[in-house]
Amino acid sequence: MSCGEDHNVDCSEILERVYVFIDNELEDATTDEIRQHLEECAPCLDQYDIERCVKKLVHRSCGDEHAPDALRQRILLRLTEIRIETSTTTIISTD
Image (cartoon, rainbow, N blue to C red):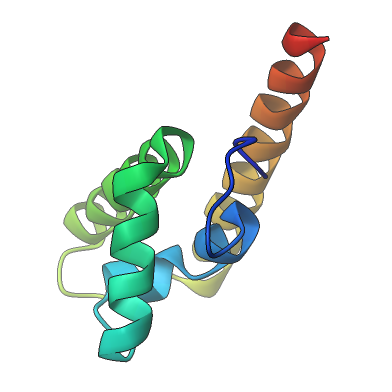
């Protein structure tokens, strides 16, 4: 994914690390890099918000239990499909 803007880090790299960022499991320098990118890039911020909401929903639904691996994989697959659909729609609508 790319928003078409020039960033220090490509949008696809940021989105690959969003879950780790949400869990605060990154080094400070990487966290700052992602935070800065999200401040500058509305499409990535939107995707971050969606993934953060899904993660909260899964956590709330599963209580203190960890989500089953199969559920996590289905959610990640669906998020990837949505990203692809959104990217394709954006590319088609800008042509």
